[in-house]
Image (cartoon, rainbow, N blue to C red; front, side, top):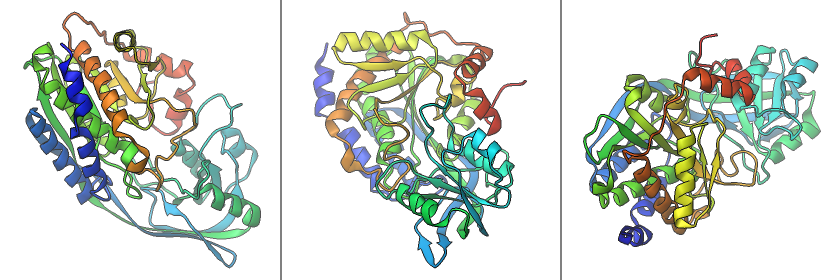
Length: 436
C-alpha cells in the first residue's frame, strides 16, 4: 500500500515546523529560544499522534554573547566571538598560521601571540582537523588569542564552540572572521600588535531533550533524532531546524503506518548539541544501550537533493539504505566510515548501531552552516518531502523484526577511528572515550 507516499508529498507539517523554528530567533543552547523551539517540537510530535510527548530538562554551562572586536592599527575589523570563549581582552602580535596544521605550530613560535588559522585543511593533509583541535594547539603552544578564518568566501565570519568537556569555557579568547577580513588581517597586520576583545556572559543555564514515541511498546527501540538548538547568529535552518522538521515529518508519516511498526520508534530532539553533544550524551548515559536497535540521526538533511547516510561500519544500516534506494529507484549515498560529530556519536562510540543522515555535498566543510547565511530561503519543501518518504521507509525497515542490526564492540569502533586517522585529533581535544 503506497497511499502514504502521496500523503507525505502533500504534507506541510515538516515545512511548517521548519518555518516555526527559524522564526523563533536565537536557539542557542540554554536560551529561552531553545526552550521555545523544544516546546514547539514537543507539541508538533503530539499533534502528529506520538504518545507521551515531553521535555526532559538538564543543566548546562550557559554562554551568551555581547560584543566582540578586533582592533588593528587604526582600524576595527568585523568578527564574532566563538561560543564558550572566555570574557577577555588581549593585546599581542598577530601570527597568520595558514591552515594551522600541527606541523605549522611545530615550526612557528606562537607564544604570547594571537594566532589566526583557516577553517579548512589542504588536500595534501592526511586528516581533517576540527576547529577545537586547532584551538587546542594554539593554547598548548602558548598563544593568548585565537582567530578562526572562514575558508568560504562571502564576508561570512564562522561560529562554533571552543573549550573541552571538563573545562567548557575555553582558556583564551576566540573569534571568527570572514575569509575577506582574514585576508586583510594577514596582508596588513601579520606580525603587528592587534587587540582581540570578547565580551560574554557566562552563567548557569538549562537545556532540554524532547521525547515521544510511536509503535508497539517494546523494550527494543529505534531512535529517530535531531538537535533543536542552533548557533545564535542565524536562523539555523540547515543546522539543524531542517533535521528537527524531518523528525516531525517522519512522525506524521509513521502515525499513519503505525501498524507497520514491529519495534517501538522513539523520536528525540536533543538539546545543546552545538556545545558538546550534551543532550545526546545525557540520554545515552541513562539509557540501556542494549535495547537501542538503531539510531537514525538527522543533522544536515534537506540542504541538497540526495541523501547521504554515514553508517559507521554497521553493515545492516548500509544494506537497508541500499534496499530502500532500489525499491524507490531513488539514489541514497552511503558512507561506511566513522563520523564522531553530531548526536549519533553519543551512542555509536559504545557500539550502538547509528547513522548520520545528511545531504550529499560537493563543497568542503559546512558551507553556509555556522554563518549568518544559514537561512531557510536556501532550502526547498520538495526536498524535505522526498527525503521524508525515503527515511520513513528506512525507519519502518529497521523496525522490522526480521532485520537484525548487530551492535559492535567499542574496541572495533576505536580501531576504525585509528585506521581513519581520527583518533589523534580526538585525543588532543579530550574527546577520546576509551581507556588507553
